[in-house]
Image 1 (tube, rainbow, N blue to C red):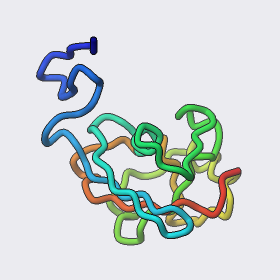
Image 2 (tube, rainbow, N blue to C red; image 1 turned 60 degrees about the vertical axis):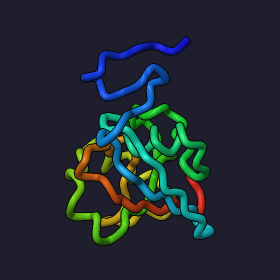
Image 3 (cartoon, rainbow, N blue to C red; image 1 turned 60 degrees about the horizontal axis):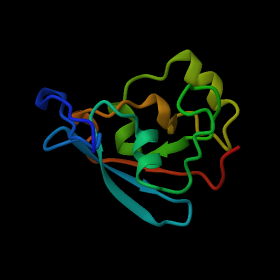
Image 4 (cartoon, one colour; image 1 turned 135 degrees about the vertical axis):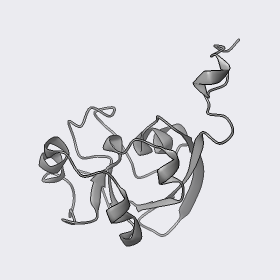
Length: 128
């Protein structure tokens, strides 16, 4: 039996988002395989990948911004639409595989909101 959240929480008894409280995120593997999934508002882009079994985002630290294994390249048209990187994220990106100074982000630091509906991210060749 699942947990029953109040309707105002925007999640059902299985912890999944409902209705308009979701954003479509497209994850592109290094080999070009695309995965477009609905991710609940309030989750992170990393959690959306993990919960949907999308390969290429390892998230070794579980989202604590203590590794760089959830590194992605944000589609160029999305770079200016995302919140600014904080110092901690910038520091961890120094350890990522082939970081791009403009397009690289850690998905654990990207909180999903309606504004991220349509976001496209591409995984690097590998995570380190």
